[in-house]
Length: 355
Image 1 (tube, rainbow, N blue to C red):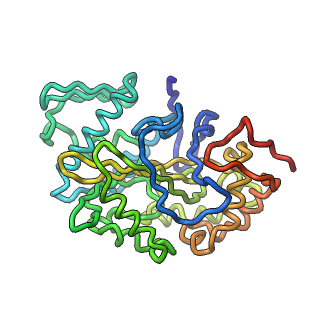
Image 2 (spheres, rainbow, N blue to C red):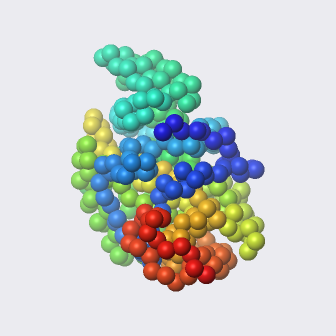
Image 3 (cartoon, one colour):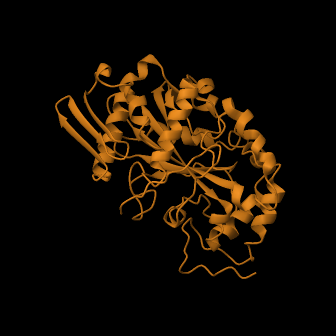
């Protein structure tokens, strides 16, 4: 299909809006009516046609607007993009991975022509036509990681693998869910996950690290993560908490459906060929509750999940104060009927709401 890109904002007047197409393909993260941390990894080898899993790096109607928002964040805070000196090779690996993937998966929008190390990259949606020499930073306007992630939706953490651990030694992080690259850079896997409640004592991160250390080139993995956000904010960083944290107090029973968003991250993991690093793309998807509940299965299930999620997790994910209001709203879309297993909407077979 031909993607119609939205003219929209993720700040100030918040004109972000999902089309029906975007709602139908939203990555709903709950496969059952309850939630607890798990490793929940699977192979990232495509998915149903039209879904966010189909391509290696999903491009959707929000692409241009998200890239404009990233540029605004970087202009205000350049430290959202950092790379330790030994990660330059991994940056070139990432540039190659994204350019090859996008030119193969979306040939109408992206082209890559290679003649030895002389490369020619065309990004039609952003109006970019760039000739450069692969592995020569002087031929690009930015370093390789920054150059390509200014053109790719989602955040990117570049992880160095050494000493039986993963170290966050580079990244482009402008759409994060309340964590800081500037704080975490140079930390290992256990250190940057230290604030997460319950998961450490459950052994989740030990199992996850074991899995990730063994991800092979050409065999990427994926998982979903989630949180809640008031207003369609991409940049919910600790550095800007004074701007977005206060917005939680603006929620009312009358506007909760419009202003409360479910925020879902598609997290993927690719082994890089030259550096042997691991790239960790974190793609953020947003949906207002009023749009989500148009899918009966999702409305029923989200009510049950948010109502029953442990206090520690609701606190960590930042919606504990507003949980009663959110649960009250969602309860009007839960008639108590059973839901089918899995994340897909099942519109053809799921019974309509009967309240």
